[in-house]
Image (tube, rainbow, N blue to C red):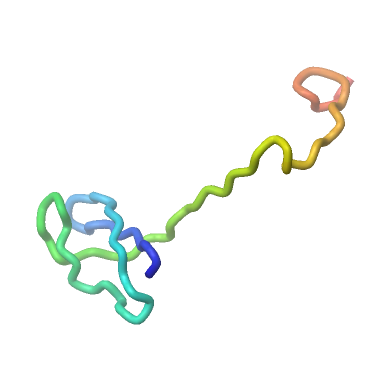
Length: 69
């Protein structure tokens, strides 16, 4: 089951819930104010990689690797 993020429209609290895909998550109570007027928000995710598997790119000359000389 995926984890979805929700925002309370009353107090603005963002919280996450484990929900099945078939359950739209309507009327979920806010953990802070218990209001059930909540909306699903677009979640962000992070993907990590180790240095051994990350591609290496050559450094450009100049300040900060920008190459503008």
